[in-house]
Image 1 (cartoon, rainbow, N blue to C red):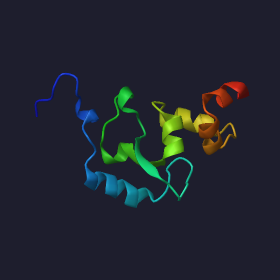
Image 2: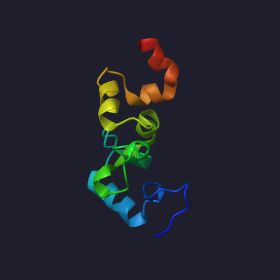
Image 3: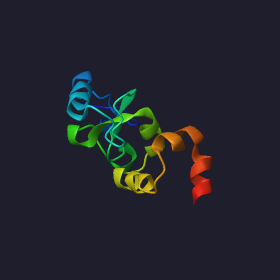
Image 4: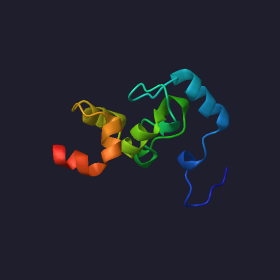
Length: 102
């Protein structure tokens, strides 16, 4: 497949069939285990770090977790979560709350 120079294969849309498979497989937020959603599809290894759209790199993520994780690796994000702050509280308060805790 020939793609425009500014589009990589990893940036292609995730097919709906893959999205549904990830949702069925995970059933809740991969990061915080929230079961209420709403959810998005997240890349464990960010696309910006070379992660692709293969199923083993995709997880279900609640919006607060996905926004907070951003382009961080999953392990770096878990390190932040292990500091004891609720990801939902941090997401609500924004980056200023994270800076104040440091």
